[in-house]
Picture 1 (cartoon, rainbow, N blue to C red):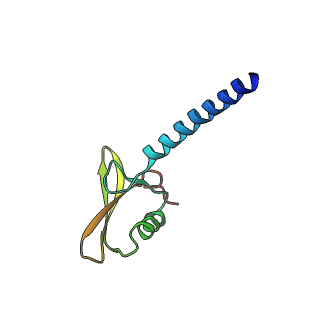
Picture 2: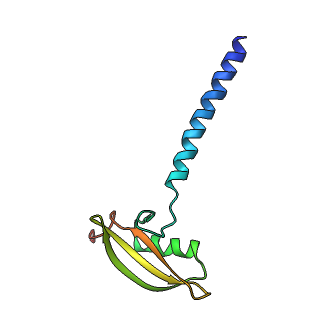
Picture 3: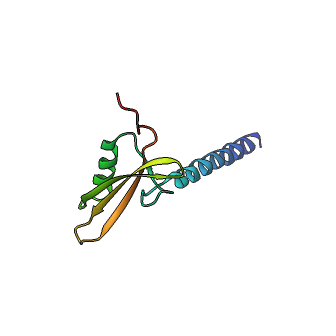
Length: 100
């Protein structure tokens, strides 16, 4: 009986921990297609790496500095091979204005 109770407690505890962890990961997923879902970048290189990994047929058309709610953002406009354009938003607060 003690083994059943112990097994049940471990199983329930594991489920609770897994559930909390997986929901946090889902809420942290960002696509970079708006200010609200901007990608936190640590460098300009990170921005271009993200674009290459997520839109490998895209060509960069422009890059602009923007501000939203007092935070700096890079907005990179790309063109896909079919001619459509996308804008990727990057939160650059971690490195903006911090040059050596």
